[in-house]
Length: 413
Image 1 (spheres, rainbow, N blue to C red):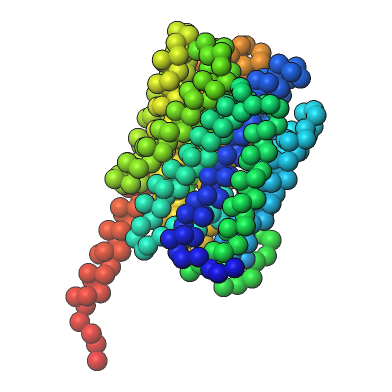
Image 2: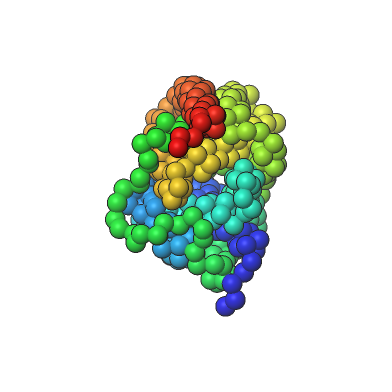
């Protein structure tokens, strides 16, 4: 197969990102069906959701820098094959065990493909366009979430086999993109020269403060996902009054649409402004979900989803730009994988805890408790961004001063 151009390869890498997020959100519209048809509790739904990040975490720890060594293309293909197996488990599922295995395989696949594809989008873009690539990566990830909500909602409400057909469509999409990805370049400019070996994610010592700031911003997006993806359909139905799965999917897709629209604006801001705006928007979103429970208003739920989508876009684009822009040479995939690791670890812990609280105390009280805890985290994100920005400014000032001194020092004979 002929090798595609950088532009085409950029968009194919974006398609891999979209599929990864589609896999992440694909059961959202069927969770209420599992609860009604199989008698699954909210806690069990949260564990089904969490099986995905829990399986993904060790992949990121052990294989986080794999694509730096074997190539972005190979890592993406292996990841999509694992995603395909996970989706097929949902197609044939007869009980919760199949769902847990399927989610674990999806986590394995996304762990292999998502960071490789995100980095590939940066590397297939023009030099100096890292911010634009990160914003577009955010947009295509939102497309994946929107497909999960709208396609899943429509097929769940109107198609035969509502608990299976959505996953058949997703499986066919994965097969198509996998075939096309075979045509992108096998290697890119920023890959490491040495062979890969099993090791943990490497964060260079001089970049650890920056990594923390970028990773916790990234984590903000995943914590919003821990509310919207496992609980969004139930919030829409139980608290906002939606009785139609397609309507519910459309309401939830506002989250994804706002991610896309906001990501187009995100490239106008520097990375530190993105992180700060994302944290502020996240605080507003979680409390609007609480207000939805108190008011039973579909309008408030719509606004909450829109606000969550905008905040997610700022969090994701800001965190990804920080991690990729300030990465040491040949450690970009490792930095990005580390960011995903922290994000998914927080999601893997946060979703089951929130699900347990909702099961014990009810949906409204569970959302209130989650809002309090998540708000404290989002405030920490703002503090981290301020400290990291000052650190970068000092480093740049020191570098500039050193260059000036070197220029004015007379040469010795």
